[in-house]
Length: 261
Image (cartoon, rainbow, N blue to C red; front, side):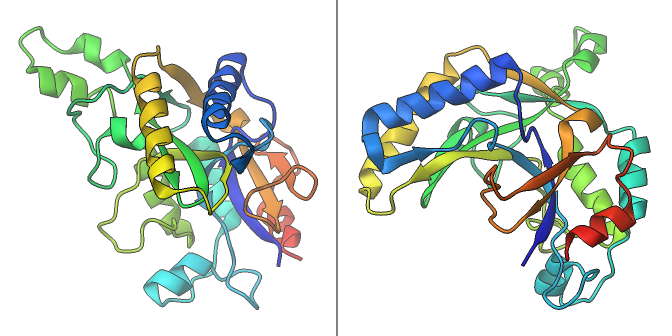
């Protein structure tokens, strides 16, 4: 069954982000060899929010049906218009450069250092978080250090995902009304399930420490970085995935709905 998702960074990457991903892939491969299958650099993507439909319907949101027990019709036209006009876009994201210390936010009750790189089952995952340095400079010198740093990491992505509910679209990690998900996460490859769990933990620890001492990569997520992708395989392989940038003049609710068929 063909499904639809809103992704960022699918396709060609900025040189610094591409170099970052390739460095992570090489490090993992250098430790576990052929048991690691890296994604094509153009295949690597970050899902902002899924637009998956419930089976048997071209318009009922799958996540609302599954997690909230409600049949909610998606307003794709309304959501696209919102994205094109909302003040949450563009926003910056910091990837890497998170040291092993407390931060003013956590991700699933873990620090950004712990979550910045992980191997989750067979998936090799990198994470970043919205980053906004400018307001920090406007704070008075007497501002508490914690308050100052908190301004660096706004909940922009979580707010964007919550806003989608107005248009009948539920983010997969907003299963209850109080859930929060401000993570920009992307897979960079797959690990053979037979690899010893202790080895996977050791690899994750090594790469995490490596990333913590490197300068972070700062990327910008704006309309030009967003795409609607139609897929049959959630890895979004290049040979079977069709993707259109949100800036494409054809992009409308009717255009997206027809992609499900």
